[in-house]
Amino acid sequence: MVSISRLAKSYRRGDQSVPVLFDISLEIPEGDFLALMGPSGSGKSTLLNLIAGIDKPDSGTLLVDGEDITRLSEADLADWRAAHVGFIFQFYNLMPVLDAFENVELPLLLTSLSRRERRERVEMALSLVGLSDRMDHHPNELSGGQQQRVAIARALIADPAIIVADEPTGDLDRKSAGEILALLRRLNEEMGKTIVMVTHDWHAVESARRVVHLEKGELVDAPAPHAAGSD
Image (cartoon, rainbow, N blue to C red; front, side, top):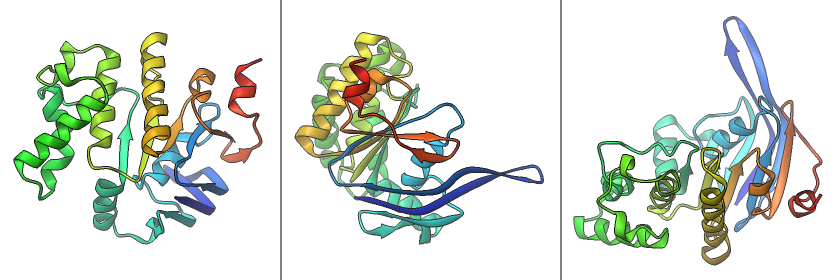
């Protein structure tokens, strides 16, 4: 699904170039559930953004589902993201003026689907995350866990090849976080969705199939998540 070779990324800070990732090589097979861990500033979110096509590397290759996305133009990359990537963020990124149905429907408005087809897809996605009875509720009428479920439904709506999640439980209480992680496991195990998740939480890591650890922009060895969680 994802094949990364010799990837490097730096950012400009004034006149200086600040390196963030160094010589990253990583394989993520289809159906994997990968957790990216590491201290703040280690490059986790940068690597996630590169995999999602939000940013471009300085060098190296990055193939997602056979497509070298480093070679795409900005316009083509935007089209590729819309068709292939589902995004889940720590703070949900829902539109406050739209209800749950409308928030989930947003990515479909740029497609050629009819209104009926969009409705069917949205209703199915909200049913999958257990929110069929909250379709007409606005974000401020939903709990944090429910808002994240809406965000997950929105991420699924275009049937993406890969789901990227940046601290998806970071703003939730333990019970709500557990429910979201159980939902992500279900998406991975029952629907075969490939998931790449950035997290600081070892409880969240226990839901993943693999963990990759970053230190100062480089991949380092780390214990298996279940072994680490049992200490």
